[in-house]
Picture 1 (cartoon, helix red, strand yellow):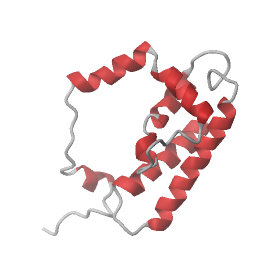
Picture 2 (cartoon, rainbow, N blue to C red; picture 1 turned 30 degrees about the vertical axis):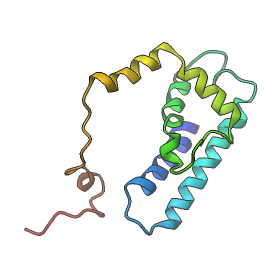
Picture 3 (cartoon, helix red, strand yellow; picture 1 turned 120 degrees about the horizontal axis):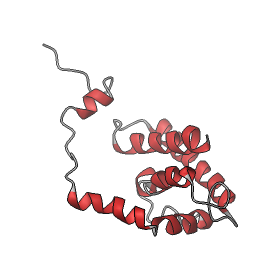
Picture 4 (spheres, helix red, strand yellow; picture 1 turned 180 degrees about the vertical axis):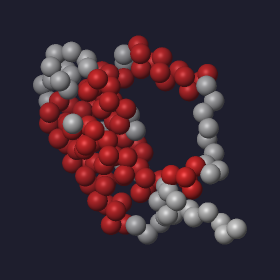
Length: 135
């Protein structure tokens, strides 16, 4: 629940307001970055002395959190080392990042061409910011 209702949505909004939203929305940008930092801190404190997020085994919770923490440089745009303030989280992330399955997932970027353009994507995702042209 923490990842699905906290870490994920607030990190996603932080990314949106820094990378996709129109300029001038400083209140929203500040709110979501601060909340993302707060969620990182909660997870950092939780990970102190733990190997995994839940119990003694690698679970779906680790996989889900890893995906967001892997994007910390986008969540905290402009920060050189966004995990520096979270040593337990940084340790956990490095441990998960070394798993063979992570390496295989990262290798997909080298063999699969992902769409990089935004042609009509932004209009579909954010219609209030990118209205259709008049006909």
